[in-house]
Picture (cartoon, helix red, strand yellow):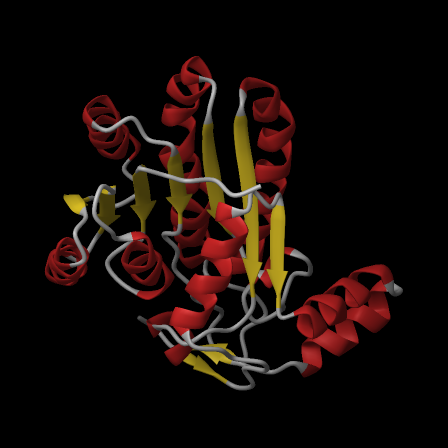
Length: 259
């Protein structure tokens, strides 16, 4: 199975994985709807995609702003019926060093962007996709969705929620011709990874991660997680007795610098 997409909406397209995926899909005959918060960076990505032959529309929108995002996506879908939406927008943060918890504002902001922002991007498009009887949704979660990490509780919660949302949505949407791909990547080169202090095992280039994810989406995979040694390690922590799993992930020390 290999799907061919002609109209693609991507959130988080101004940098990192979203930008790399936009550039990977850019080609003549492709309409790209790119959403990001940084106008200058988004314009640069859009320009490179146009140079590759794609038709591009830009939306400078915070995905946490449900009304603005829904209005923009609905308008883009009206002009270019979307057959693939990639919810890639995401942020990361963490507790202050030595803290016993994470500031509530830091936690809720990550959930608002990483989880609710993805829902805001996907849910408005499902009725139109169902009416057309086709479409694919790609949700960019994280390996942190498999096991909460003590140095990023809000991030882990947002990605675990996104993974669960995608699994539930897939079971509902597939009978209507809509596929759902859940992506759980580990570390890859990006501005987000650059802000992490500590071990980043199996890190790969952003371009390689984008190629891997694009291939999984185009082949209609229901889920893709990588790198597999890190995925298996985190899943093992989840099935071991809780005290042992906690001890292991507590030893995986890092901290996330403020954006």
